[in-house]
Amino acid sequence: MMDLKRPVEIAPETFWIGSYIEGDIFQCNNYLIRDGKECVLVDPGSAITFEESFKKLKYLTDPANIKYIICHHQDPDITGSLPMLIEALPQGERYIITHWRTYFLLKHLNLHLPFYLVDQHDYRLTLESGRTLKFILTPYMHYPGNIVTFDESTGVLFSSDIFGGWMESWQLFADESYPEKMRPFHEVYMPSKEIVLFTLSRLKKLPIKVIAPQHGSIIKDKKIIEAAFRALEEFNYGILLESPSFEEVKRLEVKRSIVKKVELFSRDKLCLSEVVPFAVNAIRTMLPVVEIGVWISQKHTEATYSSSGGYNVPLESKKHQHRFRFSDGDTKATVSITLSREPRDRWEKELMEEVASIIFYTAKRDIHIRSLEASAFRYRKMALTDSLTGLYRKEAVESIAAKEVKKAKLQGKPLSCLMLDIDNFKAVNDTKGHLTGDMLLKEVGKAIRECLRKNDIPIRYGGDEFLIFLPGSGLEAALKVAERLKASVEQVEVDGAKVKVSVGVTELKKEESIHDLVRRCDMALYRAKRLGKNRIEALLT
Image: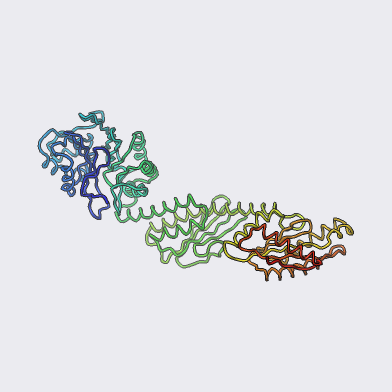
């Protein structure tokens, strides 16, 4: 565990010397660049953190070695300790580094120290060791004369308020969640996106390895640095124009954080069944959500979904239900959000509206995908359907029946197979002609379909041979189906021609494949044929 009572090295000869304040969401960081007798103190800090920070400074170097004190701007969390610091430091050559606009305010502290104004020194400072500090003007990032410092030798950007954050649970080094934690601080502090984008365009040119902000966490990971830049480009700014109180700002940030989470989640998930439950759980951190429901219509397709009932369950009107209607071209939708009470303020209402909008676009994508899947299923079924009998073609054994066999094994449920062959069918063709034979096969296919359940799989396996899979049916139930099928087929008559059938029946064993199952069913049918035809035979082994 990191000891925050001691200095922490964040880069070669570069140290965090801040003072952690328990429970403060506005932690302040100050830093020391150790360079012999030309040490640089970056943002000296406030009066309330001075004592501990000065102890850390003395642990690292003789206070007499502090030659430069960088003040990125004039706020008291940076400059409040200056009078105490200057009193504690021994006399010697020493400068306050800042911008001319900040100097006009800092001179009123009557510090009796000379100023090193970056705008008069080409925005650079080169120490005797050769270490060069580059200063970048970042105007109006909360203050007209705001600057940041880049140490060219280590790649550390001392970023002042930029990349800082308010955090309920503070840690010195940033993790992957940090970029979103910068949101409340920046959206309140920075006046406009135009100003932020201007500043970022300057900072992006620097080969940054570490970002050391005055507030929040230090960012050392390259991916998190990149994510932090992207986040600053996306945030909204100037929030105080609409939210005057601190409590309102906190409520607004909770709302925006929830919306952002739902939005990011919905980018990766395609279905309402994934996004809506996530949205319910996310919103519950601010609102007592009972249910979210969606009705959507697109062209000739209509669908419903609710967090409590799933797909295609009728949506009912309920107390404290709020409906949000959307229309986009040929798509119309209603998203309903039901609470256990009425919303209490504008932030709760806006939260529902913004989440409903995200759900609408998810619903558009969902219904489109489901429509495509339904079309694909229809075309696939057409490709696998025998045009004469209306039953599946032989290829369905591998593409459809095999999946049912696999499912039966995984779920430990029974599955049986029937093989049915028309006895002496060649005689029908020879005496009545092939046209009558085809009509007879068509009627036999119809009779088979009418005897089966929706999830059974009837296949025309050969010319006058049929294979039927019965998911969920054991051998005893399959034998009853076989009797019913035999009786039904024998009622078929075309042009005076009637037929008898032989049937083989078997049940799936745990260890066998679909091919083993079909082979045993074929053996059962062969037995029925060998024993005189017009009968049903079951094969158990």
